[in-house]
Length: 313
Image (tube, rainbow, N blue to C red; front, side, top):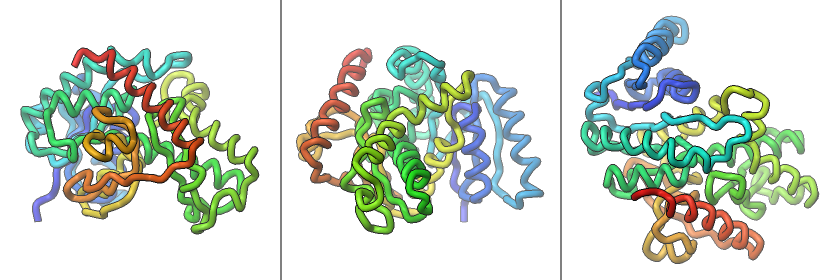
């Protein structure tokens, strides 16, 4: 059986952590590409030198040349300028638009059949950029944010309740920003409502911490942003596609037609629950939200729309 090929664009902390996680799963061979070719090659070599100890046979190679990424099954875009303390995700808009645009031109040229997972911030606007620049079908272009935001939400609930993370099913939708929408109604502990375990005040505290989870890490690190949990979140999405899991998770995808109207977000990429499998985004699930959640959702969609309208697309 021929091994799948995954390209990771950007050999920074997220890209290199993801390369190691993927290699350990022996899911595919991995090409790590970076404008700093030495960094990509050095990190790839370092990962391969761990293979006799960790016992994996996936191959990781580093490059600075997009020719080496040809015919990738999945391309993950982590390249871009990181958030610095005091910077909003919006400050990154134009800088990262240029990065994502040039990357997507190369993906379109060398891997026209690939699935594209965007990680670069501001996430929803960059996912929209990738969709427009590649011209790929909307099922094959998605942004990773909901998996990460939901994981943070779940961890904070676990920390607060003292109950295993394995019992917690948390859900976050909306734009990947400070007005994301953690869903109270669809967040459960062993199938029971989270409200059985946390008071309204405690839950609000957890929701607030989730919204600013990325910023909390930026403040602590001072010189960078989160990478272990983001890399794990991308791994989850890649495996859902390659192993045809048909997993329900939250991701930023293009909304149009009936589902776009239902969510009042036609023509935008925003985080919603999807079924992710071998054909990419196989279904978008319509959620029956509470009035409060709909109000939060609309606010989140407006934020995304304002950003997208600034893009020269």
